[in-house]
Image (cartoon, rainbow, N blue to C red; front, top):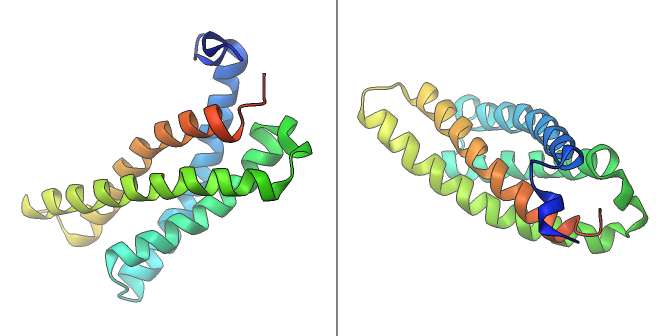
Length: 146
């Protein structure tokens, strides 16, 4: 597979990135909902709530990316693909958690309410991880797609 064929200049790859981002947006809804229920509604510590909400979003994203973004990969066994997606997601969780932690601290230290800071930090963390997840999954989990 040529790296040039996987750039955003390639119309098919741009279409995949847009689909990946749409799937990611639906995952973000799951992520935000679970995070807010756990952290703000039930008082679960932010980083634990983030890990749980991120995991829920990963399950949703894996399912929809397999069915819609990269349907060509359905012939690959889930037991091969899911661990790859999972490893990429674990790194993504580490990045997400670090960004969330530091961004929230920064926003709260500048007078923002805890709830607003948590949600803005989460939005920023999701945006940062979007690029990691697409690149790493495209090069590894979905590398067989031309």
